[in-house]
Length: 187
Image (cartoon, rainbow, N blue to C red; front, side):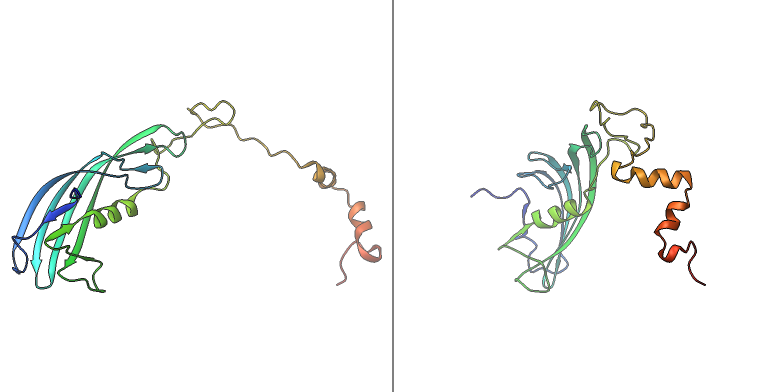
C-alpha cells in the first residue's frame, strides 16, 4: 500500500523531549476535502509549513496550511477559486489514549485527520463569487446585474372576499358576526 501524502516520518525525534523539526510539505490531495459548494478537489495542492516538537508523551504538530478552494457561487453558480489558509495544532501520543484524539502509527505522524478537520470546519456554507452577488433571474436564468423590482404578492383567491371587506371598511359584516347583535364587546 502506498504511503499517504499526509504522513511524516518522525523516527529521528521520537522519545527525545525538546527535539524539534521543521518541514515544508507540498501535499497533493488524494481525495476531495469538503462536501458543500466549495472544497479542495482531488489533485489540489496544499502547502504545509510544519513544526514537530517532541514532548514527554508524544509529538506536537503545528502547521500553517494554504491552498486554493474550488467550487461554485451559491447564488449564481459561477465557478469559484478562493485562496484558503488555516492553522493546525495537534498532539500525537506515543500510545493510544482517550485524552488524545490522535496517536503515532509506529514512527509516523499522519496529518490527514487534523488538516481535514481544520478545512471542513472553516468552509463557508454559502460561498459567493462577490459579496453583493444578486443570483440568477428566476425567469431567464441569467445572472442578475441589478435587483429585481419588488412585486406585490397576489392575494389568494380564497381570501379575496375578506380582502374586499377590509378595504371597504364595511362594519356591517362584522356586526352580523358578533353574538347577540353587539358590535362592541361588553365592558
